[in-house]
Amino acid sequence: MRALYPGSFDPLTLGHLDLIERSAVLFDGLVVAVLQNPSKTPTFSLEQRLQQIRRATAHLQGVEVRSFDGLTVDVARACGAGVILRGLRAMSDFEFELQLAHTNKSLAPHLETLFLATAAHHSFLSSSVVKEVARFGGDVSHMVPQGVADDLVTLFNRLSPSC
Ligand code: ADP
Image 1 (cartoon, rainbow, N blue to C red):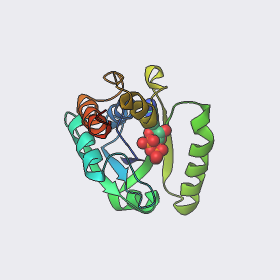
Image 2: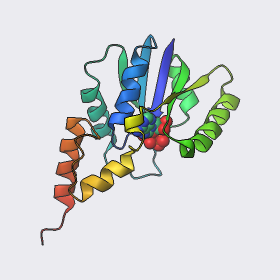
Image 3: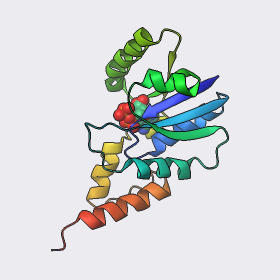
Image 4: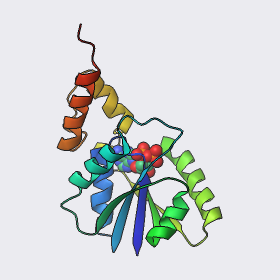
C-alpha cells in the first residue's frame, strides 16, 4: 500500500524527517506532498521546500516528493495512496488532526488516516519554533537537516537590518 504524507513543511524539520524515515519502511511507497496554499504566504517558496525535502530524503527508497493544491483526498487518489499519514506531537495536535481525519473520511470513505507518534525528542519541534530560533541567530542544527539550516541562515541574514 502507498501512503501520502501531506503538509506545509515550511520548513522541513527533523520531526518531519523522522516520520518520513519510519513510514518509508512501512509502506510500498510514500509520497510527501507539499501544500501550495494560495491564501497563505509561506516563508520558503514551494520550490525551496520541495528541494529541501528531496535533498533530505535522497537516501530513502520509495519516497517521492511533489507539490499539491486543492483537497488532500484528491491528491491521495491521484497518487494511488490508500493512507494519509499525519504526525501527533501532543494532545494539542489531536483535536485539529481528528477533525481533519473525519472530514477526509467523509469525503473519501476508503481512505484511512494513520497517525504516527512523534519521536519523544522531537516532540517540541515545529516549523514555527525553528524559524523563531533561527531569526534570532540561534543554533538549529539539532532541529532541521543541514540543507534547511543553511537556507535559514541565508534567509535571516538577508532579512536582518544592516544597522
Ligand atoms: P500542516 O500545515 O499540514 O499542519 P506541517 O508541516 O506543520 O503541515 O505538519 C505536517 C504534519 O507533520 C502534521 O501531521 C504534523 O502534526 C506533523 N509534524 C509536525 N512536526 C512534527 C514533529 N516534530 N514530529 C512529528 N510530526 C510532526
